[in-house]
Length: 250
Image (cartoon, rainbow, N blue to C red; front, side, top):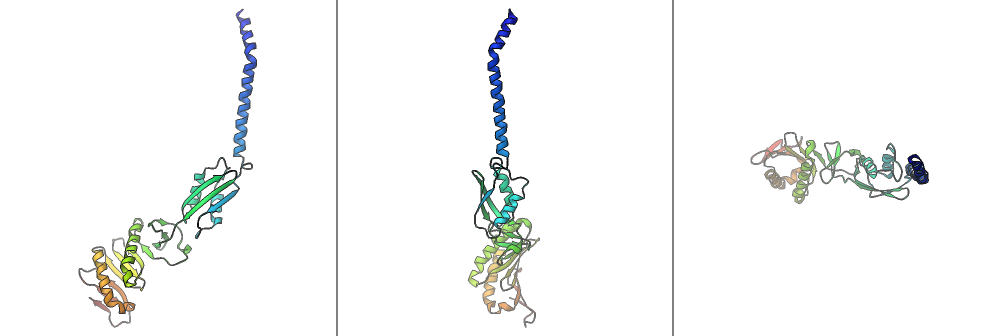
């Protein structure tokens, strides 16, 4: 009797079990088909790109080449925009980039370029925040002040250049270059070619001393080679070859 009852129960529940099995199979097939459709680059390709932002030192082609260099761009559904952004940040002139996807096949790229403020160690460029970026100097379209110093001191050197520009403005003098040596000694070259030796101590006092001295020597500025301010008082003035004064202390 028990065996007959078990068979009867099986016959009773078999249609439901078969139906459930069929539903599971169809569901799995739908999931696999959907995933396959979503990842098929022929069905949902990222085929359009909109580039926004002011481009001065890079071009739209540079951006496209950076994205094309990726192993796989993927589809609209599978592409990680963070990977696209990282690929674009590898371009040295890009400071910030935002990538967004727009259904069904478009990516929007908004780019912010670095602004060049000065050159650094005759190799790369510094932006207004003092951050060094590895764009070649040959990309510059205009002359920039030349800054030099240990790799970690770009912000300090740039800040000093800005300070000098303000302090020397009443003299109608601008600063061509600023250097911080390995011994932390400061050297400054003016637009007239005059080199200032400020040393490492009493920097502010020596700047004020130069300003007072320059007002006295302004009519001779084209003959001055350097002014050494590394003294407790006064300064040594070096003259260009060919001048009557070879060296003069004030």
